[in-house]
Every structure is written in structure tokens, then in C-alpha cells.
Length: 332
Image (cartoon, helix red, strand yellow):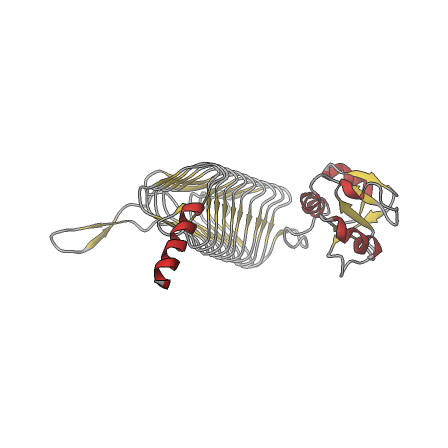
């Protein structure tokens, strides 16, 4: 959609310098921008190329406030964040906006409750007593199980599976192939025979508001209670989260990470790619765990803003010291 620059400035909390009547409808890099695109710069050295580009306007920091006005400027203390919010204000980056209603090739149970403005694409299935909130889109080939609740303005990309009883909040994005609420990996070994008996997996998965879940990620439901993904958490592609995990708000989990069952991840934690965490471990608020880091079962990592690395994970400074010692020993 096209929007006036003043409307965009109001939406992203930026100060507009220049033509308030100019309009934008897209975003782009400086090199590929057209006359209707917004671009952004975080570093003053890129301001000149941005002003010389074809873009309709530039989102920039305070360093641009006194620049020669070649085109409108939207001044923000955090240009990259403002650019992301501008994309959202323009309705970009959250799925295909075409189509409306339930596709004739979709199967929706008569007891399901479908709100106004919901789109259910071809070959999707919505089960008994499921609920889908206003403005949500369910992509082609997705399976929404019985009793699943999906909130408002969500984007469920193609071939997502939400197992029965899963609850999804508002403005959640789930990318293609993700599986939500599957059985956890829980078994009891019969010591007499050596055989494994499946432990009941009868809990549920709760995904709170503003969460994004990457393609082919898998999140297990609780065994007896629930697995919970907190508000604003961002989960990358190919992440696995086991049963009974409690993920707090604004956690970031990068690709190919694996979490065993019953793990607690506190607010603001950042997990790098290919991190592995053992069962019943706890990662306290604000911890950063580097790529391929490993946490042993039942361990606790503490230290807001502290970076951990290695397996078993330890503060980065200590880890680097140990690497240096090993390197010196190798030379000897």
C-alpha cells in the first residue's frame, strides 16, 4: 500500500524533514531502490549515496538532520529499527495479502469458529472446535488440529501442522513446515525386559503474542502440563524445543539449536546457532550463549549480559584463556 511520509513518520516515531505529501510503498537497499522506496542508513558515511539514490526518502540518525536536503529525511535514534517498523506500516514482509475467505479446496469442520477476515488457503484442514481469530491467514496445506486456538492477525505459512489443543496468541508468524505441539520424546524403560514404554504426552503447547517461529522448527507439547513460548520470542529455522520447556519473553534462538525437555530459558536470553541444552537446565535472564555452545543437564547459567561459549559452556573470557593454554601446550 502507498502511504504518506508523514503517516509513516507518525507510525514509526520519526521526525520528518521535507515533503510530507510524498508517498512511499516499498523498502529497498540503497543500490536497488526505486522512486517509491524507503532506504535507511545507520552510518554517516553512507548518507551521501542514500541521498543520491532513487529512493523517495531516507531513514537516518540525527547525523543527517543538518544535511543538504536532496530528498525527505525521517530522523530516528535507531534507523534500522525504524526501517523495520516502516516495512510493517507499509504492510510488507508478512505473507501474501491476496485472496479472502475459505478456499473451496480447504476442509473446515462445521464446529470450527472462523472470525472475520480470516483466509484459509487451498488443501488446508481446520479441525473440530478450532478457533481462528480475525485477520489471520492459514497457508496452503496446513493442518490446524481439533481444539487449536489461533489469535488475531497471525500468518501461518504453508504446510504448518498445529497438533490438537495448541494455543497460539495474536500476531504470531509461523513459517512453512513448522510442527507445533507434537508429542515429546518421553519413554520409560522396563528394567526387566529392557524395552521402552511411551510416557503419556497429554499436555499442550502455548505460544504467546508476537512470536515468530522459523521454517521446519518443531516444538513439543508438555507431557502432563504445558510447553510455553513467551511473548516476543524469535525462533529460527530448524530449531527443536522439547516437552515442558518454559521459554520466557524476548528470547532469540538461532538455527539448528536443540533443547531437551523441561528446560527454563529466562527473559532476553540469546542462543546462537547449533546450541545444545540438556534436560532440566536453566539459562538465567540476559545470558548470551555462543554458537555450538553446550549446557549439561541440570546446570544453571547466570550473568545478565555475559557471553558463554564452549561445551560445557563457560564465560567467554575463561573459555578463551583455556584455548590459549591449550595452544601453548601444543607448541611445547
